Image 1 (tube, helix red, strand yellow):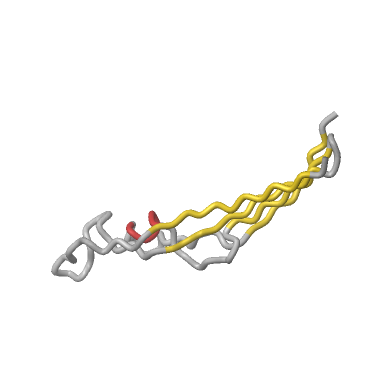
Image 2 (spheres, rainbow, N blue to C red; image 1 turned 45 degrees about the vertical axis):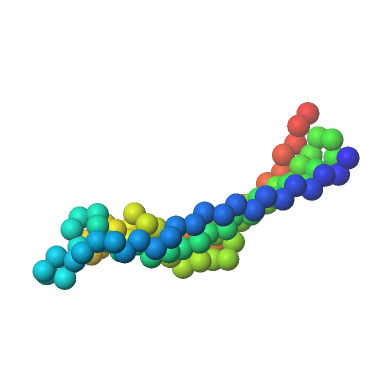
Length: 96
């Protein structure tokens, strides 16, 4: 009855650099460069018994240091926000 399930999820953003800068050296509105980043998330669950399951989730498994695409192209100082670092959650599911 013991069952282990593991899922690995990937989200990737590729580099975008297709716009010309203005004479000021800046880009227009949402035409900025977007640097590539790659994120992996892991989900696992283990059925201990017919009614009990343990769960584990890890976001940003390799703790990538990145700015989300939306933060990169917004190009206004003070509005940059780094992406979420590695985070995990654990749980127990009991069904009666």
